[in-house]
Length: 256
Image 1: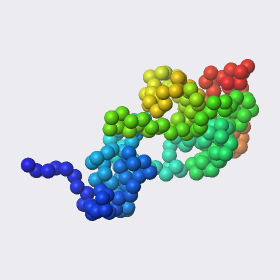
Image 2: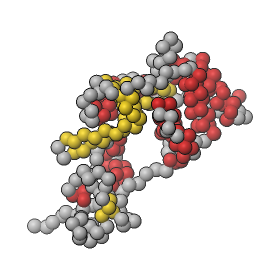
Image 3: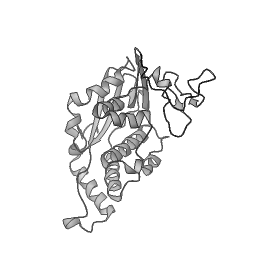
């Protein structure tokens, strides 16, 4: 019978490893890597165990298996400066919120690596300034950590995830979106939060903090010659004039 199992053309067995080019992973439950420049994941190691599954990886696999293959198996990633604006702003906002809950975290370095355009910088700066101006409360009591890693094993499948903020009995996910109503529908966040709950039975509930991405435009019409600083001030004023529009569930009395 013909054997159709794939064999790596660079396979060089030895030393009790799948291959002499094998690089051990940090977590022994995950398949290792390859020192050959043409290969990222070791094909031979993946015959025995698959890469960890996360919510984002599963989403990619369902949407496009080729995208999953490029990212997880080949290790290809889009450079931060080439990411679409929604992802850039989302990462910048996550970094800012992370810093508010952990002052040792350098959010400015993370934001700088995104190479935001002047208009994008104006949007995120206006949001950060308004967050502080509105004195929105920062809950640190019971905080376990930010970007808290979870790991759960179901049979031979290993699930991982990173929670934006993990508390002793709850978790918090931060979302910056031009369509905040999307995250207000439980079915659109249930799978992601459900993945996290697998990692810690002590977590009783999850909260999704939703922030609206500024949609004001510049560089056209009456704002044709508007400078980035002026654009930021206009967004800042708009946020302060209607905070509930930008920060879902905003309560002026409780500052939440």
